[in-house]
Structure formats: C-alpha cells, structure tokens
Image 1: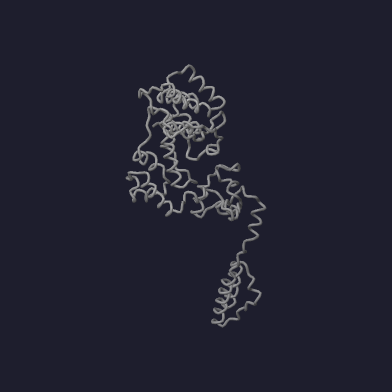
Image 2 (image 1 turned 135 degrees about the vertical axis):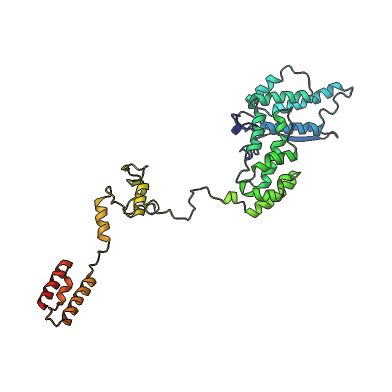
Length: 369
C-alpha cells in the first residue's frame, strides 16, 4: 500500500474514538420478533455535523437487526403471503432512512427513488453508493492504510487498542462490499506487529508475539510486556520538555562561551560564525591557538570587561628570594677573603634590578683586591 493517498487523516474510523460517536442521538424502532412480541430498538442518527463513523455504526446495526428479526428469512420460499413478506423486506430501507437527517437523508431518498427490488443485496448496493457519495470512492484504501500504518496511540493501553483494531477491521467490508476484513493472523502481521512501541519490540520477538495465531494470544503477550515496561512510552517526556518541579537552568551559565578569556554568551561571541558579532575568525582557529599556547587577546572583548577581569587576577610576586640568595652568596665570599665587605642592610630586600646588584658586588670585590 503506497503513501500517496491524500486524505488518510480524514478516515471515518480512528483509534481514538471521536467525540459524539458514543453519545449520539438515537431513534427508536419497533420490531416484531418470531414470537410476535414487539421489541423497542434504537439506531444512531447520522446527519450533516455528526462523525463519519456514525454512518458505519448505523449500517452495522441495521444489518444486525435484520438478522435478528429475520426480515429476509422467507426470501424466495414460495410463501403465499407475498404481500406481507414484501412489506417486511421494506423495513430495512425505511428504518435506515429514518435514522438519516439533513443532507444524508436527501441523498438516500435520491438513491432509492423508484426502487422496487427489495432484497438484501440491493440494500447493500444502495448503502455502498451512499457511503461513496459522502466519504469518497477511495475511502476503503485510506482506511486500510490508516489501520496498517498508524502506531498504537501513546495514551491507549494494549487491550483497548487491540479491541479498537478489531472493530475497525470488522467494518472495513462496509466501506467496500467487494473487500473482506483481515483474518486474525493477517491482522497480527500487518497491523499489530509493525505498530507496537519500539521499546517493546525485543520482548515481543522473544515471546514470539509475531508468531501468535490469535488476537487473544497476542493481546496476552503485549499486556505482559506493557506491565513490565510500566507503559514507559506514556511516561517518557518529549525531548526538551521541563519537568514540573525542575528549576529553569541559568542561561548565562549554560550558554556561556567556552573560549579562554571570553566573558560573554556564546551567541555574542565574535568567533561564532552564527553570531551577528562574527569577525571572520572561526572559533576552531582560536581553539588551535589555545592548544598551542599562543592565544591572542580578544580584540572585540569589551574593555571594561577586560579591565575588571585583570583587576581580579592576583598580582605576580617579585622573586625576592632569588635576590636574597645572591646577596648572601656575595657576602659570604667577601667574609672568607677577610675583606671589609659592605654589609647589605635590610633595605636591600627591595632591590629590583639584577644589574644594580651585579654592579654593587663588583665594587665590593674591587675593594678587596
């Protein structure tokens, strides 16, 4: 079955029962059973603004009613009471027509106008014409495609889903008299197996659900899998959806630029090719410079931001300990030679230049020699 059909979303029957199907207005019908008792029956009313499925439900119930009250039981039996038998056969046309209102009723009246052949087959042909005029002549193909290609609804449990599959399958032949409903094994192979949740497929194969011969057996298997998985297809949140009590993340932290020395959001980075501030230098080149240890300062960074950043950095300590070691070494050398070495006072600790220190030591050595 191809995917070129245009109105699969507008099929008469869906897995989720449309509002109005189970709460439709009803019409009361009086029928006489085989014992002569009068029975009150009800049929759903199908009109312009009611769900399409109601027409199939009405047709299904009127066909069941004729079997129950045997409206066509004496068809062709040579009965002497031919007039009574003929009138009885008209009941299916009359009751079906009474349950139609508005545009469907006018179409039915036009289809059955000047009709005198009151047989069950003739009624099915007339009902087929009505369905095609209201739904379209490819409605069977659309409904069949929907049944075989639509996944199990996430909020519907397995038992309800399989029951609904059976109902839709039973009514397929109402859409086209020349077509038959799917058998149980065919339903399992074409409808159930390809449309279960993906998380269940492994357990389904291990339990040989795809080889089940009856819908009852496959329903038992899937109910066990559904219970084991805790119906995780319903509980799983869609990607990106925030949980009710979960605080919103801080955007300034989650979306901050990761390049060294860049104190801004990634969307504002001058090395982000999707940013409106892009300066032509791709962030990948900056990464290479970082790894090589030659990262150039970011010229597009806000000056105030850099000055604040620099002020927050700890100042480098001067290497006074190295100066002290050199001074002490010179002092000890002068002492060993018996010279009157100039002792460096505590103030020498503030000497900044190694050159001045070197010149001082040279003068001292000159005094010794």
